Length: 110
Length: 111
Image: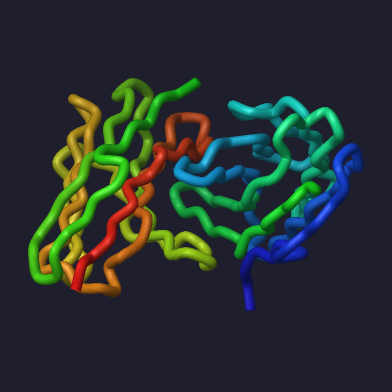
């Protein structure tokens, strides 16, 4: 079945540690995105990539890093520089006008 | 930062009543406007993609209209049911294909 897989669904980390969230798609989509959602707020764009080996900062990229070495994969690293990393993270991919989403990863930093 | 705004932020509607909410966006370089329905603990589900000014789309009791010249879209729900409770997101695609989401409208249907 085609789709987007995010893992893990829940993640706990200690403050000061880097953590990498996985996003894999087998839809052959060029564009991939990472969004963050906080309680009571909408989706805010962290990073996006429109092609392999290229990515752009979104609205809230500080404290995050990404890579796009393969078309299928767009991992997001939440670094220790991110001041408020606890949030729900959603990955998406799109082909022209249609976007598909993963199930999300809820990251809690303690 | 591209501003895609949705209003109201949250809404409580009595079961059986009809309701609507708004998505506003910059009209320049418009490519497509998307509506998604997002239930807690699930992936957002695509409802509509609209590309032409004056587009109207319908899916059961839910419909949407688009005005690209003035930069807004309305989502209508007729005869609300408890299963309509969700967050409704709109997203704008401009010429560079980047999806930019609004903050969402959280709809709660009161039985």
